[in-house]
Length: 335
Image (cartoon, rainbow, N blue to C red; front, side):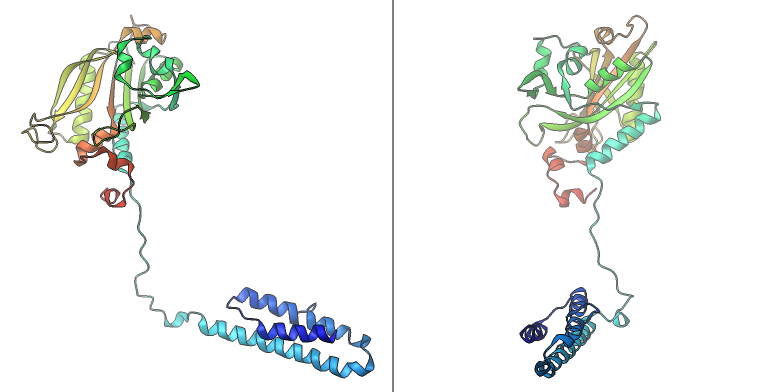
């Protein structure tokens, strides 16, 4: 018993800490109601008479050294703590860098806001799709050369499953579940097997629109896109439509706007033509309506699609597509 007390006295002398919680645990262990000192006092009656004097002296030494150690540690903690009375509360606080919206998100939200003003709803769908929704329902027959226009990521174990190459697959799902009239846009991420460069990437974002109703004409399409371009790029923006080909629209067109940098005068960005391509569009092919169980004798419609990265590059004068994916804080802070 005496050896145990001597061992504990040595433990008290060696104990050091800068933590308030550890000091409190130490106090409870040695000086608490069920601590070591209290335990030894309860055993005093069982100590032989010739050992009681030595035992009592050692227990008192343990008690006093423990109490002294607790007071010393608390005093040191008090000295090392911050004196709030000496703080200059007028000094500015620590600054924290705040994030900003990604340019892709900014442009995506602007596009959505413009079209919702025209009554378009927002539709979303899966990024992993089947051949029907991505190709067949959109007038891409098997072995049709138009399928080669888009290099596709197919799932090796099931060639019918693939990463969608455009958000038109969402429009197919809308036509399958919703009766005409339909007026919706489909923003989302798409995938194509392309080499990554300043002008291309295997991952990018699109917004595609679809409007189906009775007596929808190409004039309605043109007026919708005129309104969109002027709202996004400014009231002085000019548009031109060039004939093109897409399997799911007929007739089809590509849309150019007057160069946002030179105002149509010609520069190296627009290759001195004064025009920049922003999207493709056209009247929905009757075969597409029929494939999706929509009466093509009663209804007509138009569709359009644009790359969000391309719109952002044109609006902000960004020359390298890869910057959108690098998460360089120096680039992102500009937005």
